[in-house]
Length: 63
Image (cartoon, rainbow, N blue to C red; front, side, top):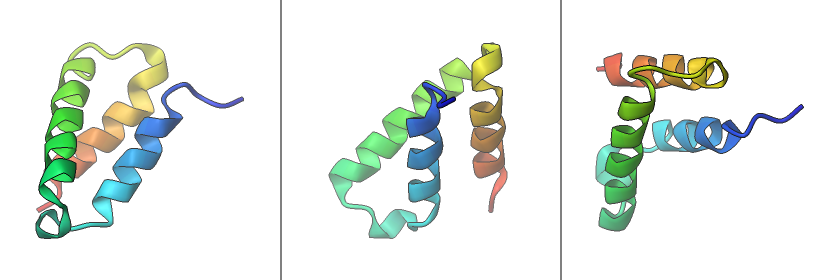
């Protein structure tokens, strides 16, 4: 069964593959927006979002 959060998984994976200086400005803003929304979601995540929030946390801890 496909998760409704699957696009978030894929988006995070795609973003991780690019360094910040390779992102066009419009994409950088979308990345910032996604990061902000994930931060809000992950403050009190529903059960279905736990894996996305764990991935988001790992991305934030990456140097």
